[in-house]
Image 1: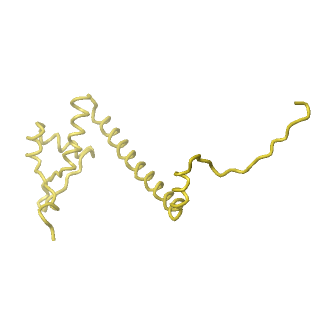
Image 2: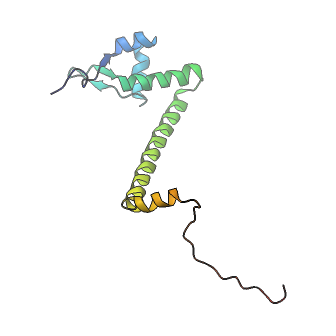
Image 3: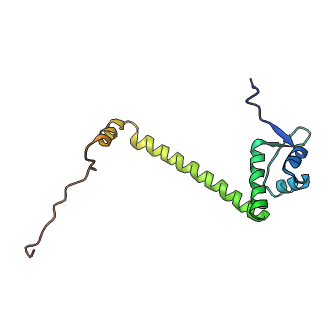
Length: 133
């Protein structure tokens, strides 16, 4: 059962163009270039979500404020996606390490954390001195 909060808001191309002061053909160009991917209604009308609008704002900021061309925008957006993927993979890896190494050993680590002098477990190494010293 969908409540009012669960439903996403969608905007037509004319509303988006008017809101952001751009021509609808510009939005169509961004879609052709793969920068935006709006949903479609049953009648094949473009429907822009809040996420699409955030992405459009980023595109417009890069182009209008920073002077980046379409090719540069594409490169920047691709790099952002790769960074987000890497962050996700690193977080998954850290979660795996936490589960495999730390889970079940909380008491041991808590004792070390509370120790007056923290020492790491190490082997004692005998150092030979020469008679010349």
